[in-house]
Image (cartoon, rainbow, N blue to C red; front, top):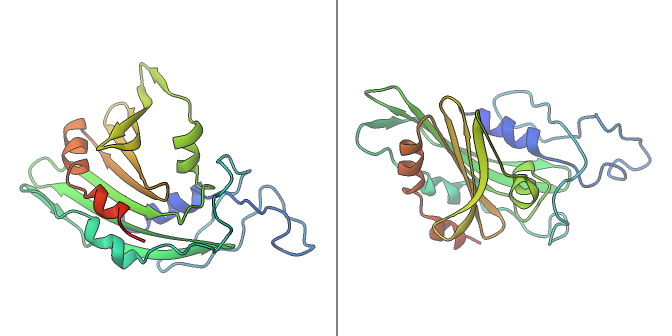
Length: 205
């Protein structure tokens, strides 16, 4: 996942709580694209659907996300035998909702294996598809992989595997932060997931 990749994932995952009404009397098409603050680096085309997640605890804008600068230190340094790109972060807006996120890519010097880590602060907005996944997603296991609810270091988590080499772990922290680790092997997934200070993230306000 390169520097803008996680931004696109977030924006494609965002759903709109206010499909009607935010634009005054203007009609909103279910397949239309809402206004999004343009982040640096490219044109974004988010997809909008009906909100699958629970009703937000807070009104839009009532809680501000922490600065991406506060999240950056929680992206771990590469362990021995790995190198990493410079960490990347930003704060973004969609209608009344703001969120912050950071991302870093890692590469194994000997095998070329990649790992990427993203950390999001949703500021208690549950319209993101990954929050809906945590709350409602169906667990499954097939010949092609699995998806299942679990816990990781005392936090709710969601683990996925798709053949042949795609492993993911999403860890929900304090009902507002989401840590996502993606790797090509389960060993590397566990190695990098264990490098993150989840309690430190939970202490951010």
